[in-house]
Length: 164
Image (cartoon, rainbow, N blue to C red; front, side, top):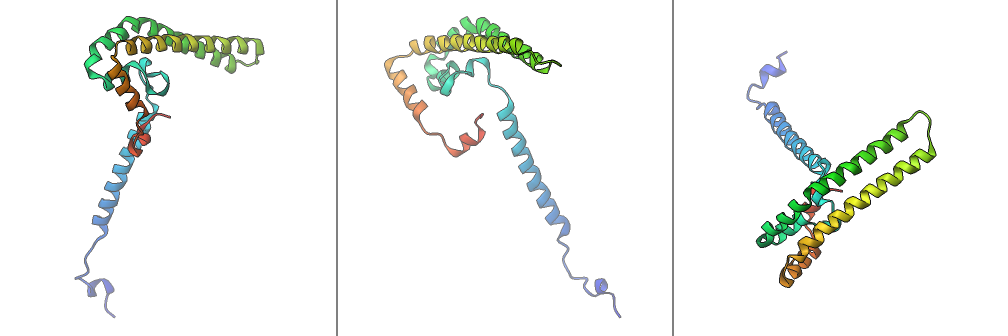
């Protein structure tokens, strides 16, 4: 009897090449998924917390001619926005401390929750003020352009990379 491996020396070996291609495809997919996860998990800057994408940062992208003036508004409010953001984060830390306590105290929880809501409201009000002052700088034509851009439907690729 002859050896089956010795009888077929002309048989091409495709194993390593196929494995290399599969490995490459897997790595590309893994890098893509990691990038998507990172983009979704990294919090936006404090000025981008406004609802529905209408915020000073978005306005600067939509109306580049007014970028310097909008940046000046943001700079004027930056310290206050930062302070309010830090206060909101501190209020959340205190709330989590109440939740993590060995014995649950409903009164302390209600107080901490009210503080979180108050801090969030103050932050949102200041953010809305920055947005309003930025919109005031725009001409009627620029405001019309912004309104059209905000209403414009987004493509599937942008939806995939947006934050939840």
